[in-house]
Amino acid sequence: MKHILRYTLMFVLLFSVISDIMAQGQAIKKRHEVKRKETIFGIARDNGITIQELINANPEMNAPGYELKKGDFIRIPYPAGQAPKVQAKVEKPQTNVNADMRLRALRVGVMLPLHNDNGDGKRMVEYYRGVLMACDSLRSEGVSVDIRAWNVAEDSDIRVSLLDPHAADRDLIIGPLYSKQVKALGDFAKAHDISVLIPFSINTKEINDNPYLYQVYQNGNALNDSYVSRFYQRFKNCHPVIIDCNDTTSTKGPFTSTLRRKLEQEGIEYSITNLRSSEGAFMKCFSTTQRNIVVLNTSRSSELSVAFAKLSGMLLQNPRLRISIFGYPEWLMYTKTHLDNYYKFDVYIPSTYYMDPLSQRTIRFANRYRANFKQDMQRYHARFAATGFDQAYFFIKGLHLYGKHFTGSQGSVGYTPLQTPLHFERFGKGGLMNHAMMFVHYTNDQHVETIKF
Image (cartoon, rainbow, N blue to C red):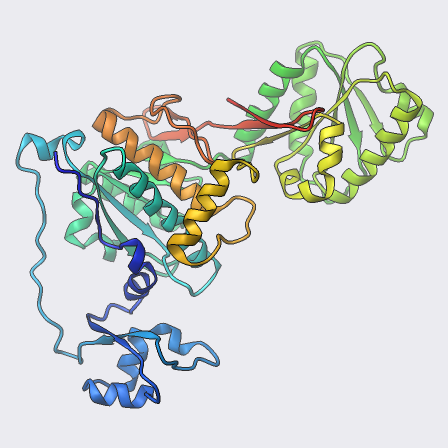
């Protein structure tokens, strides 16, 4: 089999092609390199188009303070009414090789807001770049991919994108980003036998009865139940100490309430204290014979600082106490401030993602991203390019191995995620939901381990 990776949007053309996707439906005749002293008026005149047609094809020209600069590349559209008529050619599986995706190039579609108009678009452009990087990595393993992308913004009618003949021949569609677009895409996928990966925070009722949907997002209640269950498994022989931090804005009440019910059901005694308690009253809540596992009822950094100070003072008086702390996903954002205390207090942070910033694999990925796209990833704690890479690699490799029998079950692909683990289970007779989670553990000997479930 000749392995050819056919990108509709190639790495080296990513900036210009994503912009072409945004060009308000205009057919693009050519790309033009701006020369010295050229103006928008002159370029429009020389190409027989109006200034507005030129601006519509290049939305960035609408940005405040935009200046045409020598060396810029802009898109020249066909004049109104003169766009070439192209008969779309649809590849229809006719042979057994085409019918079985394991024996041919995987056909992948991406339907996300791929634009630079707002934060959603910029994040999804980075996510899409990660998808392309995964395709490139898979090519080296002999997996061929035919990938196409559609810009489906928040105000877009996704049904317009689904009219494209190439939408119906996909094996996998990644998207959408917005809940209101799920039903139309889900119905389309069901009609055309296409798997749909919903990559971000959509909790849709369509998952109840559409077997073609894969939902990555886990809602708060599901995660709380999962975190509590794993907490019990790991710390059932410890003495839990719940600290009230007097944070009236805290959203962690559902977690601590669920945890307390679980401990009571299992007959495990626990203590409750307060950050404002006297040193003596605070100390009485800790066991001198068991390891103590501390849980705060807030995720805020300020209260965490106070808790570390109070616990450190107590350890000075009672150095034989054994203390670990169970935190919240938000604590991953505070590592620069609290890293030493994370190690000191053997902190466990539950999360659905983690990328070790010091690992050689992370550094290679960041360098590769910079080389491909001439810029660094955006500074979000969960890197969107890494999320796109992990999700695309997992699904494309899985479909390559198992075809229509792929379900995303744990360990089925044999892939160690860069940042975002995936583990899907069937939801009744409907779609599949992600159940992956982990504990990020900062050990006393100053290492970080991830305990995956």
